[in-house]
Length: 359
Image (cartoon, rainbow, N blue to C red; front, side):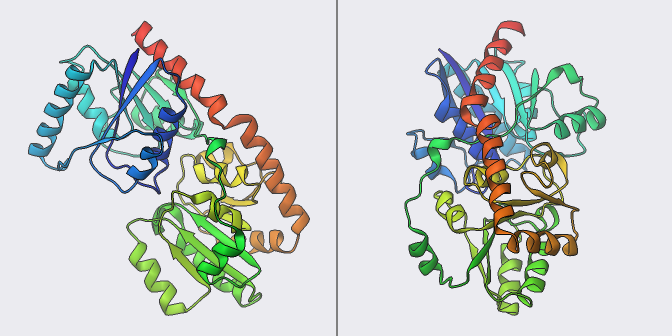
């Protein structure tokens, strides 16, 4: 049996990285034994569903003392659990395992989930790198001079077995106090600068002047949560801000249109989840989004930061219910054909085996 240790700074419900780790462990064959070490997070409940308890280290990664303690703990853990592969999901741990590999007989792999800059000498030292999109791969080659033969592309994915509706639409709407006919939704990290939630709020306010039957649900957590709550209270709009949910598909079920107004996006899992629920998606034409959404066919693409384009795209879907259904159905077919655990997990397992056999 091959033992793989996944390393991630935080395991959060609103974090696509944490969800990917969960899906890898949930769907892997019994030939692989997976372990997780993290430094915290609010998403541990997700792993309890698969009877997997991550080890949480209460250490400060921003201090030298904390980093040394993390390194020593990982060294001991790898020895005692016969770890074969260290799989990091954050640059911090990629640097740590670069040091560890000099002390252990282990192979190293890193999943690159976002585009970042700086720390060129200390970054991306693993034996192989997994990019979640061609956009991320190009970023690594252009900005970090990584040999492209060292980079493999594995897109984000979903598990259709996780799609469970446990609350009726009426029951959930009543609990949220929603009486409006059309619900627009955002799911993700609450970050103005990267996720463009400010653009969505401005567009929604413009639309409400034209149509009072609209309601906006924002689901997630993040650094700008307080500012968003303040904005909602000051403007008294039909907007609900909801914390990250493990039963997220109940909420997709009542949402009519999913909006992803990101200014930066390596590859959004939300667009896959929305597609699995046959929901029309409006996204920005950035990063890996354009590798999934074919504008006008299985979603609508707008320029990042453009409120007017978002308003027009929303009106196009709101005023054309049949077109909205077509977009949702086309995305549904694409997701089920290309982005489920059935298609993606074998790629991970083949790369794990390749890593152990070649390097």
